[in-house]
Length: 345
Image 1 (spheres, rainbow, N blue to C red):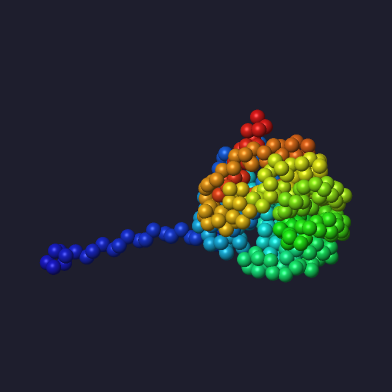
Image 2: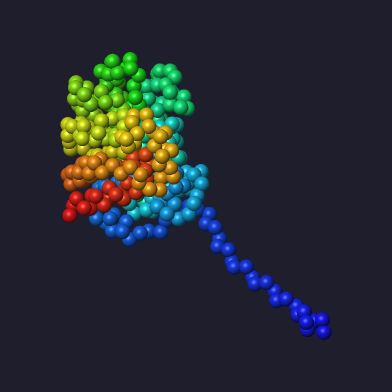
């Protein structure tokens, strides 16, 4: 009787099988509009971002949330599968020289037509040795040293990246006031260093050496003409540095005209609204970098015209963008690509 009144409870349902977590970083699902944009862009244009280690790009670049440490080690392969991302700026090389094996690891993760923009280590490109906050502590005796530039930068990048190297960028950090008063000597040192660099052509036919400056004085007479001449003599080019420390893009274009025709190297780093020292402010305001906060339509429109002229003339264009440019580098890349296609119609 008791058994009939209190039947045995049915067994609980079996738990649904858990989806096995992926062991590698997975790219976001491809979007047809991105594939259509890529197909319409010039093949000589390589758009991309500054680094790729941002968890906030979930849905834009990544399929899921991943910690930045995992993205740093494993995210490049997934990043390079996004149709619009055909380049990346390796900014970490500025803080410490990378080895041949590190560059080789990068090259093995990306498609054949992908290109790298590499920043020279501060060991040779910064006149000051700085602390962790960026404050200059002492003079850098290795500034623009030709031997170090070759051994610690050019040769490892060439050996590791091979034909996937796009641009080697010497970003000359802001100079001390005393050095600005003897800028001719700095330009002499720069010319000597550039002349000592090996040719990139045999290993990386698409690659170019570029010089980015962070002092507007370089673009003023008589220094602008000297800079253009020494870059031309070395077969190098000027890196269009879009940063609040520098004049707007329109005021930098005369340097590009003086060097024409040349490949375009552009690094869009910081929105001008934040001022010359507003990098940390932009980081806090724009994080987690998943939307456009400050669209800079004027800069976009001018940059697109420069890209169009360069690629139409048959030259490569390497354009990399920071999250601090407008709020989200992947979305700025998409906006630039769309503007390029619209301009071509």
